[in-house]
Amino acid sequence: MIEWLWPWAFAALPLPWLIRRLIQRRRLQQPALVVPSIEDFSAVTAADHTLGSHSPWRLIALSLAWALLLAALARPQFTGDPVNLPTTGRDLMLAVDISGSMATEDMEIDGDYVERLAVVKAVIANFAEARVGDRIGLVLFGTNAYLQAPLTFDVKSVNRLLIEAPVGIAGGKTAIGDAIGLAVKRLRLRPQDEKVLILLTDGANNVGEVEPRIAAELAARDSIRIYTIGVGADEMRMPGLLGRISGRTTNPSADLDEETLQSIADSTGGRYFRAKDPRALMEIYALIDQLEPVEQEAEIFRPVQSLYFWPLGGSLLVWVLVLSWDFRRRLQIASASHA
Image (tube, rainbow, N blue to C red; front, side, top):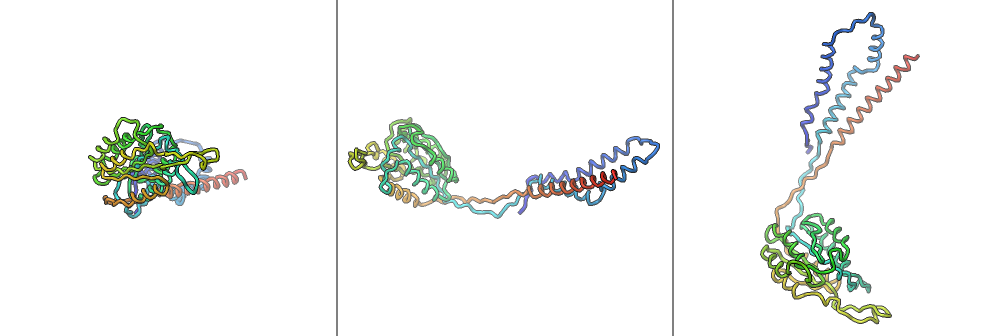
């Protein structure tokens, strides 16, 4: 279906005719010019007729160009058939720890050790891409918590913002309570039974204005389920003189406060998961992905395509043809007069 956004533009269609009539009327009202001879004016009149300025086809072409220009100004657009957008109905807020400890290289992939945040980014990106119909938001936290992306269907932008976030940009400490509080602030105005917060960290709350348990109580009041994930290996061999083989074994997750993370999940009806390696992390997000969705009202989208460039191009083409024909006739008249 073709629609016109500015149909009132067609009201200017008789404007050239009105201007021409006004000019002719003023000419008739002006006093006549008395000259002794009209021989010089006969040459001008003949040239004017030779040029074809009063020919019917030229008038039709100029009228067509003007009508096409007004059609472009009226902004025609083609509106397609309505398309139902998929909506499973959940609002998912992802809170990701990007403190300095997330740079610890204790995640083993094919015999190589990579930093925690790199693995987290890859797993969360795949998880978010599968959330068709869910709104996803992103909170990054370290010493401070920042809303990196509000709830949106634009999953690609959320993934891009997460992937581009470097370790430690939010500070070296861990403000779990502030991250939960910020996510709750964004989720609390949404409908009931549709709100989920997935919080991932590798440490303990050691900074911030809000205690994690108090923030979890606020989330529970607003029916926000929190799934907490503790990431990090239980043991890691430090590099020695001969590499990791000769190094001593340490626990890189000694600072992980599993008790608090478990309490946060329990108080909100969620669950606590422990991710000691990349495979476990992927299985955790796959399990969360299987949560029962909540239905929402279907959203309808009608694709719209602008068509103004077609009449605009046609108008310019007609103008070019008329001007080129006039220029060619003038050249012919000029060559004939010199001859």
